[in-house]
Image (cartoon, rainbow, N blue to C red; front, side):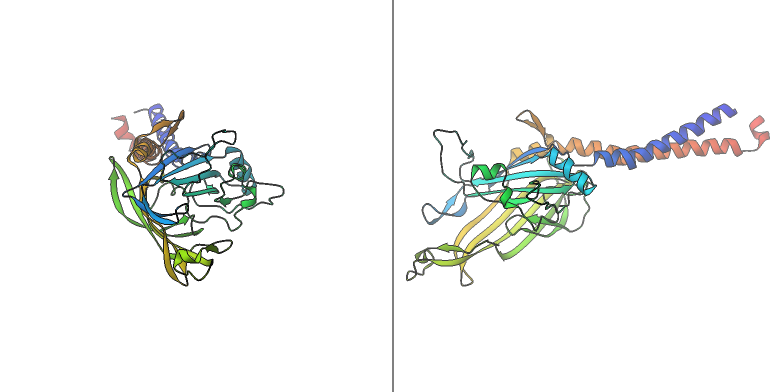
Length: 361
């Protein structure tokens, strides 16, 4: 084999090694980021009727519950905050509505037939995440100059829901919030709980499959804890057996067993389930069951997360395909290119170094 052939082998070897390096250390990190314009909807339903305290009737009542979560990315805020922090971030506004009416929707401000009925539960929050790891990043700018800071609000005022600037969450989120890291590991992480406004450990509990997709199962046990309140809740004394008092101050307690099924390549939450128990306590004793329910993603949400679907003209979910593509770029392309490149370089070196007489023969 002549010098020209050896040069071709050497060039091809260098090329494929370069492809391996570029795929692993440039293409993969570029693709392994949460999209800043992401929009996602999830629907969770109770396995059986949950027990809730209905304010209108002042009674504990068994009801079928539906919880809908909407997540919307704020591209402008992500670019602005990313430049300020000199890192790749995503900014998501989330709203979670829980009610016995599965089709509950907030009435519009100009709706003449407006229904003022409030949902059983509502929380809206903004979180800033590292685009690669999914870890929360504290962001609390001067509110007088910048209203892009994190917030948590349960207000039902329509104007506040659009931009609750006075609900800034100064302590900031912590841990994982809406997703796990790309390349999720079989270990314990910390995951955010909006009710208690802090993160708790969430432990890896094994592998399984959902609709043929490999997922990691994580479980988080949140012990009974007092719910933080700006001011103590006041209820009629008769409601908790204190008939001699017109009203009393009470505490709110909450505990949860949260299970998440994670697609490990993308870190996406494919399925979630919670066993919640919230009570109204007086003098350290539970007097009213505010919520006692097991609620989890419905089948349609899980299927969408695995196989993908179009919602309001925008693609959502489809993490089986996304994981395959990312695994191809991050693992198989670098591995096969590196092996091929090294083999070509080895062959070029062998042909160059073997004895001249043998080459002539």
